[in-house]
Length: 448
Image (cartoon, rainbow, N blue to C red; front, side, top):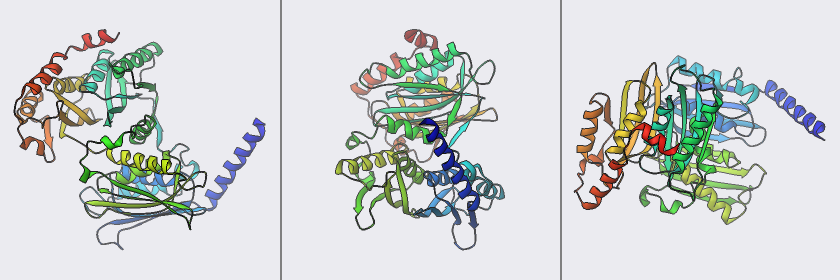
Protein backbone atom coordinates (compact mmCIF):
# COMPACT_ATOMS: atom_id res chain seq x y z
CA UNK A 1 0.00 0.00 0.00
CA UNK A 2 2.78 2.44 0.99
CA UNK A 3 4.69 1.59 -2.19
CA UNK A 4 1.66 2.35 -4.36
CA UNK A 5 1.09 5.68 -2.59
CA UNK A 6 4.77 6.60 -3.04
CA UNK A 7 4.62 5.62 -6.72
CA UNK A 8 1.50 7.73 -7.23
CA UNK A 9 3.12 10.74 -5.54
CA UNK A 10 6.25 10.37 -7.70
CA UNK A 11 4.10 10.22 -10.83
CA UNK A 12 2.24 13.37 -9.74
CA UNK A 13 5.56 15.15 -9.09
CA UNK A 14 6.96 14.13 -12.47
CA UNK A 15 3.77 15.24 -14.22
CA UNK A 16 3.89 18.58 -12.40
CA UNK A 17 7.53 19.05 -13.46
CA UNK A 18 6.61 18.21 -17.04
CA UNK A 19 3.78 20.78 -17.03
CA UNK A 20 6.12 23.44 -15.61
CA UNK A 21 8.76 22.67 -18.24
CA UNK A 22 6.15 22.97 -20.96
CA UNK A 23 4.69 26.14 -19.44
CA UNK A 24 7.51 27.99 -17.62
CA UNK A 25 6.57 31.08 -15.61
CA UNK A 26 6.63 34.32 -17.56
CA UNK A 27 7.27 37.68 -15.91
CA UNK A 28 6.66 40.95 -17.74
CA UNK A 29 7.74 44.21 -16.10
CA UNK A 30 6.32 47.36 -17.70
CA UNK A 31 7.31 50.90 -16.74
CA UNK A 32 5.55 52.59 -19.65
CA UNK A 33 1.83 51.75 -19.67
CA UNK A 34 0.98 53.19 -16.24
CA UNK A 35 1.75 56.79 -15.33
CA UNK A 36 2.41 56.36 -11.63
CA UNK A 37 3.36 52.70 -11.07
CA UNK A 38 5.42 49.81 -12.39
CA UNK A 39 3.20 47.03 -13.77
CA UNK A 40 4.33 43.45 -13.08
CA UNK A 41 2.53 40.56 -14.76
CA UNK A 42 3.17 36.95 -13.75
CA UNK A 43 1.84 34.01 -15.80
CA UNK A 44 2.40 30.43 -14.75
CA UNK A 45 0.96 26.95 -14.35
CA UNK A 46 -1.37 27.06 -11.35
CA UNK A 47 -0.70 25.48 -7.97
CA UNK A 48 -1.95 26.04 -4.43
CA UNK A 49 0.21 28.67 -2.71
CA UNK A 50 1.49 30.32 -5.88
CA UNK A 51 -0.30 33.61 -5.14
CA UNK A 52 1.32 33.86 -1.72
CA UNK A 53 4.70 33.07 -3.24
CA UNK A 54 4.45 35.96 -5.71
CA UNK A 55 3.06 38.45 -3.18
CA UNK A 56 5.76 37.47 -0.70
CA UNK A 57 8.57 38.19 -3.17
CA UNK A 58 7.18 41.67 -3.86
CA UNK A 59 6.50 42.37 -0.18
CA UNK A 60 9.99 41.31 0.91
CA UNK A 61 11.34 43.98 -1.43
CA UNK A 62 9.24 46.54 0.49
CA UNK A 63 7.26 47.37 -2.62
CA UNK A 64 3.87 49.04 -2.23
CA UNK A 65 1.08 47.28 -4.14
CA UNK A 66 -1.54 49.85 -5.13
CA UNK A 67 -3.59 47.68 -7.48
CA UNK A 68 -3.76 43.98 -8.28
CA UNK A 69 -5.78 41.72 -10.51
CA UNK A 70 -5.76 38.00 -9.71
CA UNK A 71 -7.00 35.13 -11.86
CA UNK A 72 -6.18 31.47 -11.20
CA UNK A 73 -9.21 29.61 -12.54
CA UNK A 74 -8.40 26.25 -14.09
CA UNK A 75 -4.80 25.20 -14.63
CA UNK A 76 -3.35 28.65 -15.30
CA UNK A 77 -2.37 31.50 -12.98
CA UNK A 78 -2.20 35.16 -14.04
CA UNK A 79 -1.55 38.11 -11.74
CA UNK A 80 -1.06 41.79 -12.52
CA UNK A 81 0.36 44.14 -9.87
CA UNK A 82 0.85 47.91 -9.87
CA UNK A 83 3.79 48.59 -7.55
CA UNK A 84 5.88 51.52 -6.35
CA UNK A 85 8.69 52.02 -3.88
CA UNK A 86 8.10 53.33 -0.36
CA UNK A 87 7.86 56.96 -1.50
CA UNK A 88 5.54 56.29 -4.46
CA UNK A 89 8.06 56.15 -7.32
CA UNK A 90 8.23 53.58 -10.11
CA UNK A 91 10.76 50.78 -9.74
CA UNK A 92 13.76 51.61 -11.91
CA UNK A 93 16.59 49.99 -9.94
CA UNK A 94 18.00 47.32 -12.28
CA UNK A 95 19.06 45.18 -9.34
CA UNK A 96 15.50 44.98 -7.99
CA UNK A 97 14.00 44.37 -11.43
CA UNK A 98 16.51 41.61 -12.11
CA UNK A 99 15.76 40.03 -8.71
CA UNK A 100 12.04 39.96 -9.50
CA UNK A 101 12.71 38.27 -12.83
CA UNK A 102 15.01 35.66 -11.28
CA UNK A 103 12.72 35.02 -8.30
CA UNK A 104 9.52 34.58 -10.29
CA UNK A 105 10.70 33.76 -13.81
CA UNK A 106 11.59 30.46 -15.54
CA UNK A 107 15.07 30.17 -14.00
CA UNK A 108 13.88 30.35 -10.40
CA UNK A 109 13.46 27.54 -7.88
CA UNK A 110 9.87 28.84 -7.85
CA UNK A 111 9.50 27.31 -11.31
CA UNK A 112 11.00 23.92 -10.51
CA UNK A 113 9.79 23.15 -7.02
CA UNK A 114 7.54 25.95 -5.77
CA UNK A 115 10.00 25.89 -2.83
CA UNK A 116 7.79 23.06 -1.54
CA UNK A 117 7.12 25.05 1.63
CA UNK A 118 6.24 28.62 0.71
CA UNK A 119 8.70 31.13 2.08
CA UNK A 120 10.97 28.66 3.87
CA UNK A 121 14.69 29.34 3.99
CA UNK A 122 17.40 27.71 6.06
CA UNK A 123 20.75 28.60 7.51
CA UNK A 124 23.28 27.24 9.99
CA UNK A 125 24.81 30.54 11.11
CA UNK A 126 22.22 31.07 13.83
CA UNK A 127 19.67 29.30 15.99
CA UNK A 128 15.99 30.09 15.45
CA UNK A 129 13.72 30.47 18.48
CA UNK A 130 9.92 30.69 18.25
CA UNK A 131 7.95 31.90 21.27
CA UNK A 132 4.22 32.13 21.92
CA UNK A 133 2.48 32.97 25.19
CA UNK A 134 0.37 35.46 27.14
CA UNK A 135 1.38 39.10 26.70
CA UNK A 136 2.24 41.23 29.73
CA UNK A 137 4.33 44.34 30.46
CA UNK A 138 8.04 43.63 30.54
CA UNK A 139 7.83 40.27 28.75
CA UNK A 140 10.36 41.14 26.01
CA UNK A 141 12.73 42.47 28.68
CA UNK A 142 12.54 39.22 30.65
CA UNK A 143 13.04 37.05 27.55
CA UNK A 144 16.03 39.17 26.49
CA UNK A 145 17.55 38.95 29.98
CA UNK A 146 17.37 35.15 29.94
CA UNK A 147 19.07 35.00 26.53
CA UNK A 148 21.80 37.40 27.67
CA UNK A 149 22.48 35.32 30.78
CA UNK A 150 22.79 32.22 28.59
CA UNK A 151 25.32 34.10 26.42
CA UNK A 152 23.03 34.24 23.39
CA UNK A 153 23.14 37.29 21.14
CA UNK A 154 19.88 38.30 19.42
CA UNK A 155 20.87 39.25 15.86
CA UNK A 156 17.37 39.40 14.36
CA UNK A 157 13.90 39.25 15.87
CA UNK A 158 10.32 40.23 15.26
CA UNK A 159 7.76 40.46 18.05
CA UNK A 160 3.99 40.83 17.63
CA UNK A 161 1.32 41.24 20.28
CA UNK A 162 -2.39 40.86 19.62
CA UNK A 163 -5.49 40.18 21.66
CA UNK A 164 -3.53 39.45 24.91
CA UNK A 165 -1.13 37.08 23.12
CA UNK A 166 2.53 37.59 22.21
CA UNK A 167 4.56 35.80 19.53
CA UNK A 168 8.20 36.17 18.57
CA UNK A 169 10.63 34.70 16.07
CA UNK A 170 14.24 35.28 17.11
CA UNK A 171 17.57 34.44 15.52
CA UNK A 172 20.35 34.10 18.09
CA UNK A 173 24.04 33.26 17.95
CA UNK A 174 26.53 31.94 20.47
CA UNK A 175 28.41 34.80 22.15
CA UNK A 176 31.72 32.93 21.95
CA UNK A 177 31.58 31.42 18.44
CA UNK A 178 29.27 33.88 16.67
CA UNK A 179 27.47 30.93 15.10
CA UNK A 180 24.55 28.64 15.86
CA UNK A 181 24.20 27.02 19.28
CA UNK A 182 24.80 23.29 18.89
CA UNK A 183 25.07 21.93 22.44
CA UNK A 184 21.85 19.91 23.08
CA UNK A 185 21.94 20.53 26.85
CA UNK A 186 22.28 24.25 26.36
CA UNK A 187 19.43 24.29 23.82
CA UNK A 188 17.29 22.35 26.30
CA UNK A 189 18.03 24.94 28.99
CA UNK A 190 17.13 27.78 26.61
CA UNK A 191 13.76 26.14 25.90
CA UNK A 192 13.03 25.43 29.56
CA UNK A 193 13.89 28.88 30.90
CA UNK A 194 12.10 30.76 28.13
CA UNK A 195 9.01 28.59 28.51
CA UNK A 196 8.95 29.42 32.23
CA UNK A 197 9.14 33.13 31.43
CA UNK A 198 6.31 32.85 28.91
CA UNK A 199 4.07 30.97 31.31
CA UNK A 200 4.50 33.56 34.06
CA UNK A 201 1.58 33.34 36.44
CA UNK A 202 -0.95 32.48 33.71
CA UNK A 203 -1.55 28.74 33.78
CA UNK A 204 -4.78 28.87 31.80
CA UNK A 205 -3.16 29.47 28.37
CA UNK A 206 -0.41 27.38 26.87
CA UNK A 207 3.07 28.75 26.24
CA UNK A 208 5.43 27.26 23.66
CA UNK A 209 9.12 27.55 22.88
CA UNK A 210 10.61 25.92 19.76
CA UNK A 211 14.34 25.92 19.05
CA UNK A 212 15.73 24.85 15.66
CA UNK A 213 18.52 25.47 13.14
CA UNK A 214 16.14 26.17 10.28
CA UNK A 215 14.28 29.44 9.94
CA UNK A 216 10.88 30.11 8.46
CA UNK A 217 10.00 33.32 6.69
CA UNK A 218 9.53 35.37 9.86
CA UNK A 219 6.30 37.22 9.12
CA UNK A 220 4.67 34.17 7.56
CA UNK A 221 5.60 32.15 10.62
CA UNK A 222 4.23 34.77 13.03
CA UNK A 223 0.87 34.62 11.27
CA UNK A 224 0.90 30.82 11.48
CA UNK A 225 1.81 30.84 15.17
CA UNK A 226 -0.87 33.33 16.19
CA UNK A 227 -3.47 31.61 14.01
CA UNK A 228 -2.66 28.25 15.63
CA UNK A 229 -2.85 29.98 19.03
CA UNK A 230 -6.38 31.17 18.11
CA UNK A 231 -5.63 34.81 18.77
CA UNK A 232 -8.65 35.67 16.60
CA UNK A 233 -11.07 34.52 19.30
CA UNK A 234 -12.74 37.31 21.26
CA UNK A 235 -12.00 39.86 18.55
CA UNK A 236 -15.00 41.91 19.70
CA UNK A 237 -12.81 43.18 22.52
CA UNK A 238 -10.29 44.68 20.09
CA UNK A 239 -8.55 47.83 21.24
CA UNK A 240 -9.08 49.48 17.87
CA UNK A 241 -11.74 52.15 17.76
CA UNK A 242 -14.89 51.15 15.89
CA UNK A 243 -14.23 53.63 13.07
CA UNK A 244 -10.76 52.11 12.52
CA UNK A 245 -11.85 48.48 12.58
CA UNK A 246 -11.70 46.60 9.28
CA UNK A 247 -14.96 45.85 7.47
CA UNK A 248 -14.88 42.19 6.38
CA UNK A 249 -17.84 40.45 4.73
CA UNK A 250 -18.28 36.94 3.32
CA UNK A 251 -21.19 36.02 1.03
CA UNK A 252 -21.81 33.05 -1.28
CA UNK A 253 -22.08 33.49 -5.03
CA UNK A 254 -24.29 30.50 -5.69
CA UNK A 255 -24.28 30.71 -9.50
CA UNK A 256 -20.48 30.31 -9.59
CA UNK A 257 -20.12 28.22 -6.42
CA UNK A 258 -17.68 30.74 -4.92
CA UNK A 259 -17.60 32.55 -1.61
CA UNK A 260 -16.90 36.26 -2.08
CA UNK A 261 -14.78 37.99 0.56
CA UNK A 262 -14.79 41.80 0.60
CA UNK A 263 -12.51 43.84 2.82
CA UNK A 264 -12.41 47.57 3.45
CA UNK A 265 -9.87 48.97 5.88
CA UNK A 266 -7.17 51.59 6.31
CA UNK A 267 -4.34 50.86 3.91
CA UNK A 268 -0.86 50.06 5.20
CA UNK A 269 2.31 48.30 3.97
CA UNK A 270 2.13 44.49 3.63
CA UNK A 271 -1.65 44.38 3.98
CA UNK A 272 -2.09 42.19 0.89
CA UNK A 273 0.56 39.75 2.11
CA UNK A 274 -1.10 39.43 5.53
CA UNK A 275 -4.49 38.62 4.02
CA UNK A 276 -3.25 36.19 1.36
CA UNK A 277 -1.04 34.50 3.93
CA UNK A 278 -4.02 33.88 6.22
CA UNK A 279 -6.32 32.65 3.45
CA UNK A 280 -3.60 30.23 2.33
CA UNK A 281 -2.97 28.94 5.85
CA UNK A 282 -6.71 28.46 6.31
CA UNK A 283 -6.63 26.23 3.21
CA UNK A 284 -8.63 28.52 0.92
CA UNK A 285 -7.82 29.05 -2.75
CA UNK A 286 -8.21 32.49 -4.38
CA UNK A 287 -9.64 32.02 -7.89
CA UNK A 288 -10.25 35.69 -8.68
CA UNK A 289 -9.29 38.85 -6.88
CA UNK A 290 -9.25 42.60 -7.18
CA UNK A 291 -7.19 44.98 -5.02
CA UNK A 292 -7.42 48.78 -5.00
CA UNK A 293 -5.29 50.69 -2.50
CA UNK A 294 -4.56 53.96 -4.28
CA UNK A 295 -6.12 56.08 -1.54
CA UNK A 296 -5.92 55.98 2.27
CA UNK A 297 -8.45 53.12 2.29
CA UNK A 298 -7.81 49.71 0.77
CA UNK A 299 -10.53 47.69 -0.95
CA UNK A 300 -9.98 43.99 -1.62
CA UNK A 301 -12.32 41.39 -3.09
CA UNK A 302 -11.63 37.66 -3.44
CA UNK A 303 -13.57 34.75 -4.90
CA UNK A 304 -12.52 31.74 -2.84
CA UNK A 305 -13.18 28.07 -2.25
CA UNK A 306 -11.76 25.67 0.30
CA UNK A 307 -9.08 23.31 -1.06
CA UNK A 308 -11.74 20.58 -1.06
CA UNK A 309 -13.59 22.60 -3.73
CA UNK A 310 -16.45 23.86 -1.57
CA UNK A 311 -17.46 27.45 -0.78
CA UNK A 312 -18.09 28.54 2.81
CA UNK A 313 -20.69 26.07 4.07
CA UNK A 314 -22.08 27.48 7.31
CA UNK A 315 -22.53 30.67 9.30
CA UNK A 316 -19.99 29.39 11.84
CA UNK A 317 -17.39 28.98 9.08
CA UNK A 318 -18.26 32.41 7.70
CA UNK A 319 -17.74 34.01 11.12
CA UNK A 320 -14.42 32.22 11.51
CA UNK A 321 -13.18 33.51 8.15
CA UNK A 322 -14.19 37.05 9.14
CA UNK A 323 -12.50 36.81 12.56
CA UNK A 324 -9.28 35.36 11.12
CA UNK A 325 -9.01 38.05 8.43
CA UNK A 326 -9.67 40.79 10.99
CA UNK A 327 -6.91 39.34 13.14
CA UNK A 328 -4.54 39.20 10.14
CA UNK A 329 -5.15 42.91 9.55
CA UNK A 330 -4.79 43.96 13.18
CA UNK A 331 -1.70 41.94 14.18
CA UNK A 332 0.60 44.31 12.36
CA UNK A 333 -1.24 47.51 13.31
CA UNK A 334 1.35 49.37 15.36
CA UNK A 335 -0.17 50.78 18.50
CA UNK A 336 1.99 53.12 20.53
CA UNK A 337 4.91 55.46 20.05
CA UNK A 338 7.55 54.45 17.50
CA UNK A 339 11.14 54.52 18.75
CA UNK A 340 14.11 53.66 16.56
CA UNK A 341 17.47 52.63 17.96
CA UNK A 342 20.65 52.55 15.88
CA UNK A 343 24.01 51.75 17.45
CA UNK A 344 26.90 49.28 17.41
CA UNK A 345 25.61 45.80 18.17
CA UNK A 346 26.74 43.93 21.27
CA UNK A 347 25.59 41.02 23.38
CA UNK A 348 22.95 42.18 25.88
CA UNK A 349 21.95 45.33 23.99
CA UNK A 350 18.32 44.27 23.56
CA UNK A 351 18.14 43.24 27.22
CA UNK A 352 19.54 46.58 28.43
CA UNK A 353 17.24 48.70 26.25
CA UNK A 354 14.04 46.79 27.07
CA UNK A 355 14.94 46.79 30.78
CA UNK A 356 15.08 50.59 30.66
CA UNK A 357 11.66 50.62 28.97
CA UNK A 358 10.25 48.36 31.67
CA UNK A 359 11.72 50.39 34.52
CA UNK A 360 10.01 53.47 33.06
CA UNK A 361 6.60 51.73 32.88
CA UNK A 362 6.62 51.29 29.10
CA UNK A 363 5.45 48.10 27.42
CA UNK A 364 6.49 47.00 23.92
CA UNK A 365 3.54 46.20 21.62
CA UNK A 366 5.67 45.36 18.55
CA UNK A 367 9.38 45.16 17.81
CA UNK A 368 11.70 44.61 14.86
CA UNK A 369 15.34 43.80 15.66
CA UNK A 370 17.93 43.62 12.89
CA UNK A 371 21.73 43.55 12.70
CA UNK A 372 23.45 44.97 9.63
CA UNK A 373 27.22 44.97 9.30
CA UNK A 374 27.73 45.08 13.06
CA UNK A 375 25.07 47.76 13.59
CA UNK A 376 21.86 47.16 15.53
CA UNK A 377 18.84 48.80 13.88
CA UNK A 378 15.86 48.20 16.15
CA UNK A 379 12.32 49.56 16.01
CA UNK A 380 10.02 49.49 19.04
CA UNK A 381 6.38 50.50 19.42
CA UNK A 382 5.85 51.36 23.08
CA UNK A 383 2.87 52.26 25.25
CA UNK A 384 2.42 53.28 28.86
CA UNK A 385 1.84 50.13 30.92
CA UNK A 386 -1.05 51.66 32.85
CA UNK A 387 -2.95 52.77 29.74
CA UNK A 388 -2.13 56.47 29.94
CA UNK A 389 -0.66 58.41 26.98
CA UNK A 390 3.12 58.21 26.95
CA UNK A 391 4.64 60.96 29.11
CA UNK A 392 7.10 63.06 27.04
CA UNK A 393 9.25 63.54 30.16
CA UNK A 394 9.73 59.77 30.38
CA UNK A 395 10.77 59.59 26.72
CA UNK A 396 13.23 62.44 27.23
CA UNK A 397 14.68 60.68 30.29
CA UNK A 398 15.03 57.38 28.39
CA UNK A 399 16.73 59.09 25.45
CA UNK A 400 19.19 60.79 27.80
CA UNK A 401 19.97 57.44 29.41
CA UNK A 402 20.42 55.54 26.13
CA UNK A 403 21.70 58.44 24.02
CA UNK A 404 19.85 61.20 22.16
CA UNK A 405 21.40 60.27 18.82
CA UNK A 406 21.06 56.52 19.41
CA UNK A 407 17.32 56.45 20.25
CA UNK A 408 15.00 58.59 18.17
CA UNK A 409 11.26 59.20 18.17
CA UNK A 410 9.95 58.40 14.68
CA UNK A 411 6.77 59.26 12.81
CA UNK A 412 4.15 61.51 14.36
CA UNK A 413 4.30 61.11 18.14
CA UNK A 414 0.73 62.26 18.80
CA UNK A 415 0.73 60.66 22.23
CA UNK A 416 3.47 63.04 23.35
CA UNK A 417 1.14 65.98 22.79
CA UNK A 418 -0.95 64.86 25.74
CA UNK A 419 0.73 65.04 29.12
CA UNK A 420 -1.07 62.76 31.60
CA UNK A 421 -1.98 64.00 35.03
CA UNK A 422 -0.38 62.16 37.90
CA UNK A 423 -2.74 60.03 39.93
CA UNK A 424 -2.47 57.45 42.72
CA UNK A 425 -3.25 54.73 40.18
CA UNK A 426 -0.43 55.81 37.90
CA UNK A 427 1.98 55.95 40.83
CA UNK A 428 0.89 52.51 41.95
CA UNK A 429 1.47 50.85 38.58
CA UNK A 430 4.69 52.73 37.93
CA UNK A 431 6.03 51.67 41.30
CA UNK A 432 4.93 48.10 40.71
CA UNK A 433 6.84 47.66 37.47
CA UNK A 434 9.90 49.49 38.75
CA UNK A 435 9.99 47.31 41.82
CA UNK A 436 10.07 44.24 39.54
CA UNK A 437 13.25 45.36 37.78
CA UNK A 438 16.09 43.13 38.81
CA UNK A 439 19.44 42.09 37.42
CA UNK A 440 19.69 39.46 34.73
CA UNK A 441 21.22 36.88 37.04
CA UNK A 442 18.47 37.30 39.58
CA UNK A 443 15.85 36.88 36.88
CA UNK A 444 17.30 33.64 35.59
CA UNK A 445 17.81 32.20 39.05
CA UNK A 446 14.14 32.72 39.85
CA UNK A 447 13.23 30.45 36.91
CA UNK A 448 16.01 27.90 37.26
